[in-house]
Length: 178
Figure 1: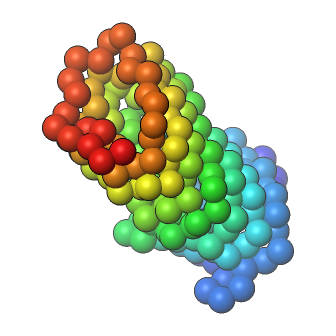
Figure 2: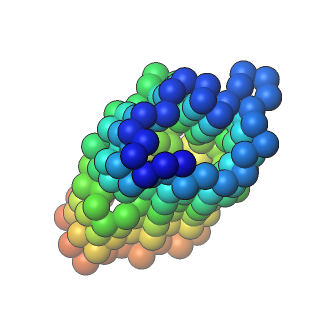
């Protein structure tokens, strides 16, 4: 995609029943908006979402076999239907150090998330952030994390977690039923 591209429209590479055969795409660094269903049901296996992204539309990557996501969009807003809605492919998600607000909606209804690495910009994980994500097996917490909200990791498949030295609040049931 050209470096000058700022907006990707609804269904640009996606489709309700069958998307494109697109397996890889390099999103431009200055991309601001990813439309609803933009890549839905395409064959994308990895996605890098840059810092400039302000909006990720409904089901933008739903149905894609995405196995790796690098996320740097610190303040992106999301549509009402999860961006990776019901994606089941085992996935690794990395939040870069530039992300300072935990993007809870990034993980909404994303059943395939297996590994998450949180950058040093994240200071708090909100209530119910990964609640019920039984497939989540590995998480790396950033050094600047100070709070883990109630039930943040309840019902996940985590078996080991290293808590950072700066942690001051560990919420109720944060790791219950793991």
